Length: 290
Image (cartoon, rainbow, N blue to C red; front, side, top):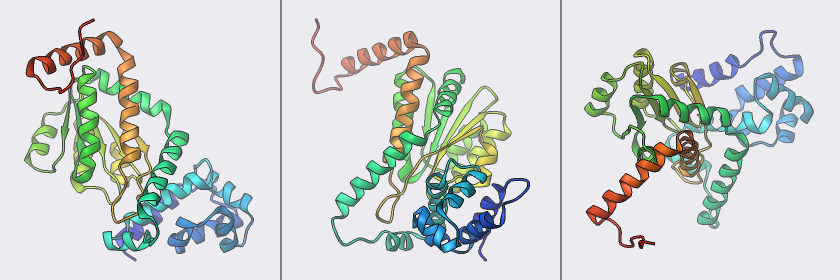
């Protein structure tokens, strides 16, 4: 068994209630552990048939493991299953010969609907409040996930807050982390197989007393242990790469929340930025004086 599989089993078993599961719930758990691929893509009825139980037992087992139901458990289960695969293997799982563009759009629409139903609003508020109180907020997002981190930092900065995006796991990241204190906040953004530098940055920030939040589709234990809160965001695509659509929507939701915490501060910051855009002649279309 590989380390990744060990991690998968450890994650599931960590959700077991103290008294364990009843025999039928254990049958469901056994399918999840031994047939993660089939379970990752199965309906509750299909999973019930594999386990030899009824669909209500699948729902109760998911709830006993700490999830709202089978769809919520399956979301993270599939994310963890896909994180164990290489890019070519992920592409093979998602292979479709018909209308890939349409399939991609449908997947993103489904992910946004899932995010709208399951995103913890209190956690969003908590992230926004931590950014508002922080002396400095650092957003760590590497690779293609940098797009999400850059958009987040750009808009939060426009809202009047001291926030920096670090988008490469190199000396800059090490230097920024070295300066963090208990007055600061770090937001780690990473999906699929996760970047080691992002996980390490979260752990180091936590050790320095900073508040740490993570946006991910399936947090590793190291990331979970370091974070004050983890926001689970669907990121499955239809090709060899994850989708960033739901991740972008999640950070936009945080910034929208942030902008309401101190409206006057945000108003002043936006007006100051607008004046500089005008002074630098940045925009093709400029607002006309009323």
